[in-house]
Image (cartoon, rainbow, N blue to C red):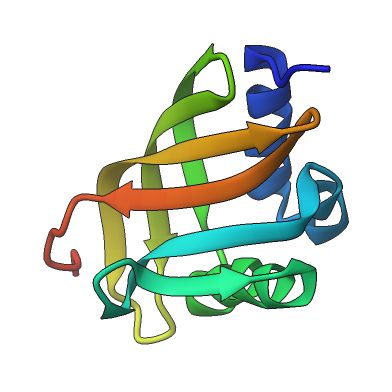
Length: 125
């Protein structure tokens, strides 16, 4: 079974609903989430279902109104990409509006790796 563009759209829709249960349904048991921000060269890496669940949830804690707008997807074999414009407001009221993408690795019809990238732009006031 292969991941399709429609699957990536459903994954994006789950992000915009802030639906952690739906998101985790797309992930393999040994999944990895490499966040776009963090102290390491790969941002912050979350390895395994519980760590990935915590990493995904942290995004909504930081940006309670987070949205990934106008997503565009493609799939090629066991790899895929989703491009989007991220918007979100931090607790201090500063707003982020940046373009970004996720680079995926698929295995057995699920997402094994979600590697996120986004532009570095100062917060908007």
